[in-house]
Length: 393
Image (cartoon, rainbow, N blue to C red; front, side, top):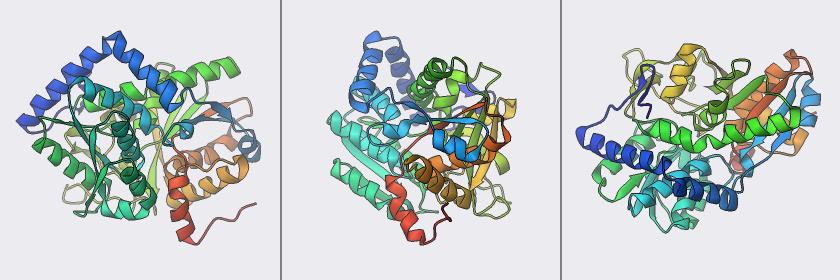
């Protein structure tokens, strides 16, 4: 298995965790070679998650912007409303195979927490979710959903009380419970083998999208766009297309209130190489070289690091990483809602914002695929509380 991506990745963890990670890698490699594991995984993706989901031609949005044709990969139509369920089903099947009875996880926007609690309920496992107290407040409905599903939601008030701190506490809790507990990591981050595992379980996004666009357009897209926090939805879409050099790939991170301020999560734009959460990757650092607090209107994108494969893809030039501000994301959220009757998650809206900029610059024979990574039900209350919405035409 690939343990690093160029010089990024690795295992920067205490010795006792190395032992647990090696056990995890061995189990994962054995599962991948077992046809019955893949068969069970695909069964639940189809019969429980509801795959395959559509690749939808957003005709109204495309015509309103002018230029390229825009397709939406509808991960928002999955059970629980986001791409996260692909990974949680895969990992919890692995946990079951390893004989684990309990799962713990971190969550920011709450979608991974909900997906983990869902999978734990399905397979009868005890479940605890760690979430920053600030994220708990702005995602109260998802907290309640997790609790409805039987999970214990533990608030994290240390540091910035957001996703990065939730990861810290979840990892520490896992270290204390290695014997009977499986850490169900939600993004393509962390020490090896987590980034490779998450990529493996999310690859279905890109595999479906490639087959679907070939069936509908008889050719590959010109551009792929996905939002990037830790980067699981993006790596799931990108993976299958990386060898297709004519396909331009764009990851969109959160610029928050502007990259000229200190209230952003623009890791790929302004980050430096460092170690966070057991991996060597790009990290937002302060002047003293310490991990810096980050900010985004999106609870799923305010992470000071990024998956190591993304750091490698940026360094090699295969993927172009850009950024969208809070304002641009909110405007894009309202635009897609008004034009297509689809309310996207605020995370996803960052990717929509890039398409709003890009599509009009392209000819109408060009094709863009956006990964619509999640639906916006969870964000409607927060948008309402902004008490300020963009002018709608």
